[in-house]
Image (tube, rainbow, N blue to C red; front, top):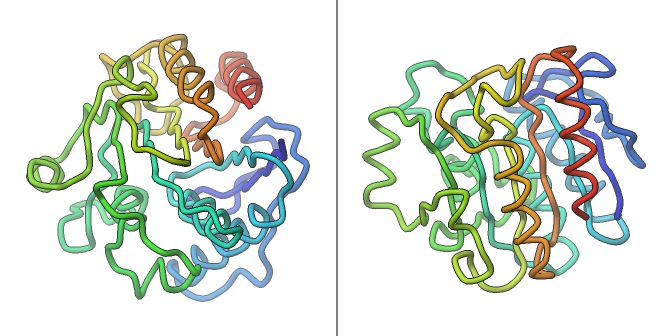
Length: 244
């Protein structure tokens, strides 16, 4: 296992300690200039470099779901063609045309599955994952445009308890966990808290089931929280790191 820290929320550098993990590799792209898409591409490309060079199973911690494209691109460089199992309280399937907030993190899964390739996939050397090879688990907070898209998309939707070897795509896959999939009452300090979700224990149990398949090519964790919200964050990091 190689632990990789990407201390960024989208293209913004996080202060030291925001993601409390002991990393074997810390991604520090240089230079980090240009517009938001240019900076994001540099962060994701540097993540891909780190993942491609990592021995064993990469364990990637970052501050944002957009980094997952770098994790997938890095595995693709090594000859692995992973599917994606995406645990998130949100859909992350907006496009530039549908987003009302302009928040790029809300496009993360849609970008990974091929939207706006000139701005994202092409810049980081990512071969987009086919929607039928993606699973979206939980996603209890959807905007109307996201719900409309998912109603006809090939992306498979499941609950966290339904995740198993039989319900996820065959072959290797990236297990992506946005920590806000956990019920907001169970994990303080989330940037985008959503109630009525699974507990931390339920999410970790699902991850354990999937890791036990032997098909998790990388574990990608988005720590979408504000720091210093208590010991729960550090405990969660330790438990996630112990999965691989």
